[in-house]
Length: 158
Length: 414
Image (cartoon, rainbow over all chains, first blue to last red; front, side, top):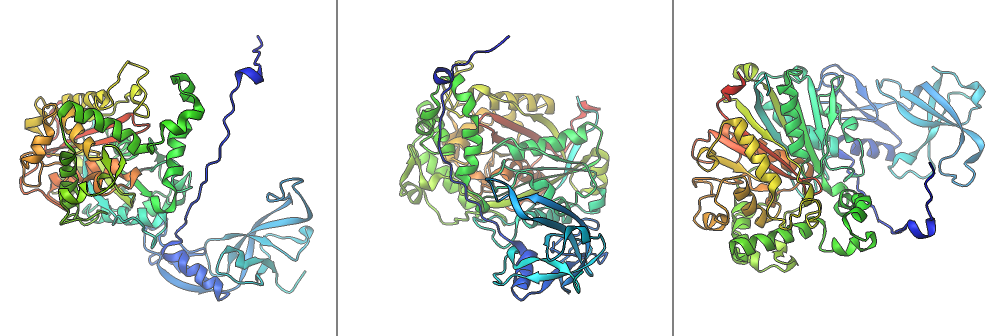
């Protein structure tokens, strides 16, 4: 059975724009995190019960349901826990091609129990190794937002 | 019928305001969960074995907020369910908590409902509810492009103004009667710690002095848009007796859909042309009362919380759910029957008219009713409350939740 639809006659198209704007309140602990970025510093939180350290910070520990509102300064170095290499760029809508492969990695800052998804830069994909030491590269213009982290690069080069 | 008698042992809130910009959504919810657990005696977060979460779909631009706030709801490594049914969301979350215990599958259930409207754009949010039904409209005989004009009165108030017109025609209620409801709500809200619009000195003249938004409803009669969260803890009769001083037993639950009332203005399905008739509410209430063994709700119910963002709805609901004879509610409000010290106190929490964190609102109704039975409400009525009801309304204006609770379990479960 085939269904014949005359698009000209049978389909009515309604076009319209809906403007959608959203706010985001950073909250109690992420506020401090972004303040920290402004000073080129990582600030995490520590669980008051089990001592787990969260970066990015959160105000509750999921394992203890205890408060995690004690702030703790963390170093600029960390370990590559996981990574992927992407040859497509989401923001490049036309071709989706990039000149250079992009590396996205899961980096666990030394002393933290959680990890962040960040760009990994200044390294060839074939040199990547899970467990390697990395150090943050700060953006040129620090604004106190997520883009302050330009990426993470290997310590001492490869 | 259920084999397990569900009970409420605690209800918690966070402070509601137009902008809780000091916390993010997860932290906002956490405040209510913490308040709920603090009031739950010996219960620890580890005892919770099921968590239910709900708010309006994507109002804050977050489609799966329950995953973000898992840790903040003590839900890590526990079964987690999200429920969202428009304005009735909170009521549906509450009813889901009841089902979870009544089924015998879970012993300690935490239900969480919230909204942080300041993060979102409520009109966009409502567009996902109202305009989301675009594909239905042609089947109801509406031209899709004309939708905007039909809804032009503004989503929720547009619906409420049709209800108000018919209610006023039926009952001969005046604008002053509507304003009286607002005054009672806002003055009550001033005495309840977690509410949004606290107006201890507001008068009927103040309300009537504001401009019309959508005739016959004025700006001063409209609920605010709030940020807030509510959490309720459910358990079995046996556990509730060990934990709570006064366990609140859920004896009847009715949640009916009223399809013809979709968007409040369509009269298609069943030839129902009166948006204040609200058969869904009548039927939900009948079912809940029959489960709870209540024959004369106007005599047996001691306290009521109904879902009324707009004052005409409060008058309409208290009649539809059987607390007052049809068209008699305005007189009851005039005579103080529904006041804090009246025979049938209604919405002493301040109601939705004073605080509307949409997703949470329909759960705050039964939650406040439960607190009134426990004697722990923010604006506690002086008389002893044995039996109370919590009512929710919403969806595409077509879903009702009706909960009857009491300090005695309903023995027919046994």
